[in-house]
Length: 88
Image (cartoon, rainbow, N blue to C red; front, top):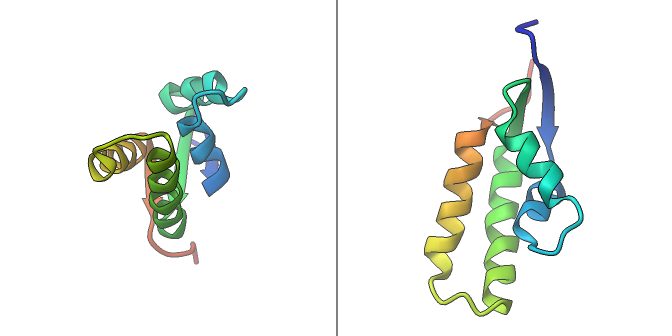
């Protein structure tokens, strides 16, 4: 099985990483950097994450919204395999 666990992240789990006061943030940092877990993220969740993170960053007063959102998406894409269609 490749020696690792497989996890599918939903939108709320990925968003918890963005929220600076989230009690789950340190756990998620470890999960994203773990070599023992293979993460998967659906393309639908990726779109939802972009939308929600843009709203969070806007309310936080981040001026470069697009750049901040793209940086988050780039991070997620480097940490998780993006699933474009359901498994058959």
